[in-house]
Image: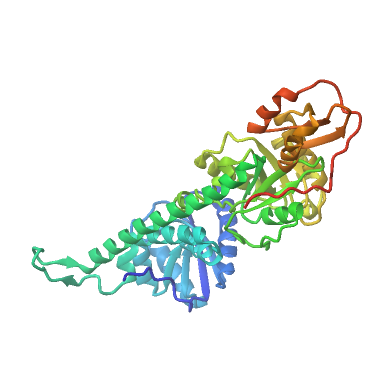
Length: 443
């Protein structure tokens, strides 16, 4: 059975290259190489050299001209690198040409990201998505992976001509694996939809945390909900979405979900493959766009996140910008600059907790505005309606009167219609919100 072969683990020393067409692109290229450097080191591969090379004309064989190719090969040999990594996307033919010329493994940013995703994937869905992306990426590169591709199988009774070349057999096997993996993903996606439908039986508001990788999404989820999601200071620390219940100060319950991080030059195959993982952002009532304000490139990172959200069809969702890591800022100038970009924004440190109360207040205001708080007088024999409102986390205030239960709440969906006949005007004299009540969220 054909298997897509991964890179040998003997790879230990990497040399990075970025090709640019104009000097105006050098600053961005350096920033992207910083990311590629971190991604590479996260795989346990040391980076021993890097270059940004300006090219006037792209060579179809190497991207670079022959003279610069010779310079790079000489530098690779001098520093004894065993892998050359391009920040630019290179074709299978260019990959083969470079490997022949340099006698070292040659890959690009796309393959590094695939390897990081493969190493971090935990759930069955994430692993299947990575497998699909790797198969699709490897299909045009089969000639590079095998030495027996020129062999042909002799024609049988039902075959004519010289027979079928080994590369054709392998390509057909990969296509079959791609089709089978896609079917598995559809089944797993249906299971995820079933789990989401269970949560939606209690029509709780949902909030999705999105943002650039390493912006602090998992740290924020842990801080707000007391979850124990993996939170590390590295790119793509987590790939699998995690949903937890968040109780706002008023007692309202929302479902908070941490999603996979975005990155510049994210391969389109991964955007397509991970749409199922990112569906939480599509169905959320509110998107929290978390931004690492301490990163000098945070504006470019925000543009990347906005672009990916648009590709996913979530550009029209209500969005709250949350600037994170303010504890790492040297002064307040960056906050003033960020405030001008988005006036409706919150500044926090998910690590220290600074600004978290402001974020919770902002969430409270948004959901109160959307749902609208209403007053009801519920008869004593219909306390089941009050209990349902509590279970949904939408009961704001409650008191007992001679005529029944007087409550203030923000019911949603079917329950809102069920309560319509018990509406009343006026104000509740005192708040009796039961802060100790903590209704469950279906898995």
